[in-house]
Image 1 (cartoon, rainbow, N blue to C red):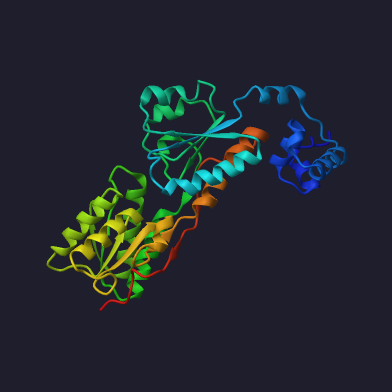
Image 2: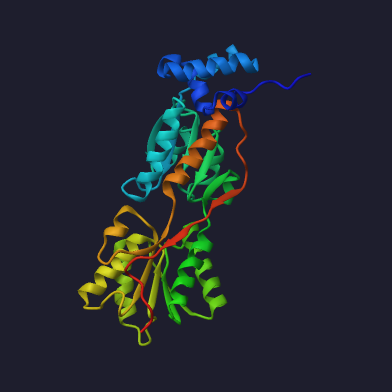
Length: 328
């Protein structure tokens, strides 16, 4: 028996995306005439047959993706959500955005209230029994929780911390302070572990102060650093916001960055390149991450492509700007 023609075969023959083929077959009015012509020619050439029953079932779906994030006021999520909306829109899917800290009753209902067909989850701190009870395709993005037993996508946070240590060590800094994120957060733990491992490998003295990703915790860390008898000459913070707080407090105390202390952040948010001085930081490809997560979820919803289990990582890189300099 010849293998069944798939929608991906039609897309390849037409030279368009699978999402475009899906739109052309389900809502031809939203596709340009030339594109529609190419798709229909590819359908005929490949012998693809639309499963009418499956198509009708799809039309009864919510045709919506739900994005759950722990702090919608955090600008870190803006590019991620924009990229998700772009991919989902191309597939004719709406995107709903909600606070993942809405409370257990609200969260428990998400997989059963018909409001979404799949979920992109940016929070690794939800109760596992709630997440496993959703009965919907779920992709974890940036944060993850192994207890969920769900596919996850993000950068290699430990390797990213190693990039920061390597940069500072190459500049001659023999002691580095790490201002960590909240201890219960998987990103904090992974970045701290990567920092300590890289410091050991380079023979750099490593110190850690607690933090919580915020500017306030960065300012407090600056005061704690200033009070140290033997201050490290460089600081690596677990977030850009923490770095902003550290540098601002240094300015208030009359301490110059980077001539008196070098600072590396993490995330490369929009403001990082415009800060004074511009922040050296780990770049997270947020648009790329958002697109990748959305593409995987759309493929699962529209084509039945199984979601890959396990933790898939995208390589980060360091952006060197004006907050780091050679050790004095």
